[in-house]
Image 1 (cartoon, rainbow over the protein chains, first blue to last red):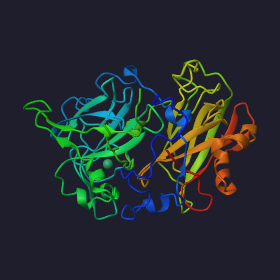
Image 2: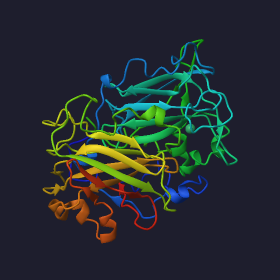
Image 3: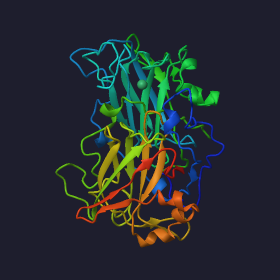
Length: 233
Length: 191
Ligand SMILES: [Fe+2]
């Protein structure tokens, strides 16, 4: 549970530039899916300050290893992605379910709606899960995904990992995407660019760290995830 | 140490093989053959549509709620068989469905009590961040004293938060449609 304080809104949202608006016309499907009325501020009650709590039993050992789905290794550049799930005070969120999914090295998802003419990899599914411990840390072993063109449009999605982080409060729920440093496609991507504040956008870019990863085997990236909430635990 | 939040991005279309597990839309059992939670079982069903009145398929729908006695999962005295958290996906015609129990009332701001309700969030391609609303129950006396409902002056907007009765049951069945934009637009909350 994030907090037992039920008296007030702990985190006024008005000054927060982290999120994109609902309507971002360059990303066309927002035009009919964006709410037209302003959101109604909600006092934080026990309904918002609680959330599902996960533990190590929620996932099996090795679910954060995306390299072991087939008989051999998947194609692509091996990477390690690691970071911590933190609250706005920098305290770790323990018991958060971190789910990650991604395209393969040629930019194709193992999903029946992805009908693009790019090969599937028999040794790659592209989905992993991890539950954070007391230090809030997570890690995934995987390959760097390929960029892919958005159907019926002129732009390409930059290489990215999809992240979903759940718990331990309703407020602390986040779905986002992690990007790679130095990618020229970022400035052309309607989804990345939907976050108006440059510094906020850049927080979605992982940090390359030559000390992470396994020497001679994989490259390392660090991506900390800061969720709404403070003074948790 | 104050940190800046990580921003939201769309769920995209290609998530279901990563995020969905069998039984995630049944909150009344921890495992398919496990014992069922206490309380009145209810089926919550609804349709998600957009500003063009078109059904929204492939939307991730999540709910979070208290158990039949008004305790959230992992609080003292909460029902060990009740998960509190559910997930499902809308079908090609925009429909979602959960099996759950009618939650008890829970404390609100100050000395107020909140009427039984279910928090419901949607994530989807075309949604750059989630929308979150609340499902309240029809013909529930406590609704008139609920601080969140009472705080919404516009009756048309407020009424979007009340589910409709479909069948008295058992199992009872209610429906709650979500209109993302336009006429009848659902009331969404800023958390
Ligand atoms: Fe993607």
